Amino acid sequence: MRPDGSEIERLTHAPTVDWFPHLSPDGELAAYSAYPPGTRGHPADLWVELKLVRGGDWSTAAPVARIFCGQGTINVNSWSSDSSRFAFVAYPMD
Image (cartoon, rainbow, N blue to C red; front, top):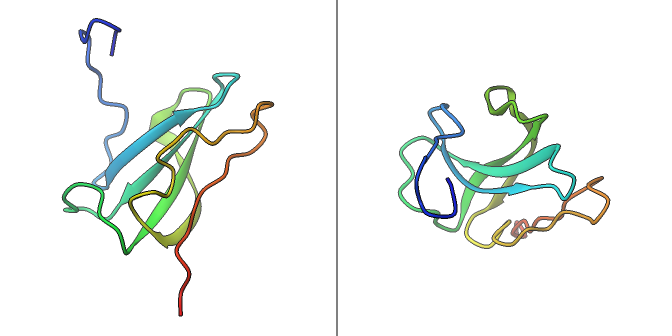
């Protein structure tokens, strides 16, 4: 969306519930969390896929990892300054 709140655009069209898109510093990549279909909000304690978008093509987002996590996994932009990697938090499994 624009800074004034206009031109809202949906980026993904998968059945998943997608949250927290973070653009890399160079603008070439994005990472986001894909929750299971039907998830309400962004709760904790779920299996979630982290997806990577290349070159602005959100329709071909590739799974990077399937992790047990939820709220707090990538709440803040965690890309390295050279856009080569990003950090995330997964919950420990006992």
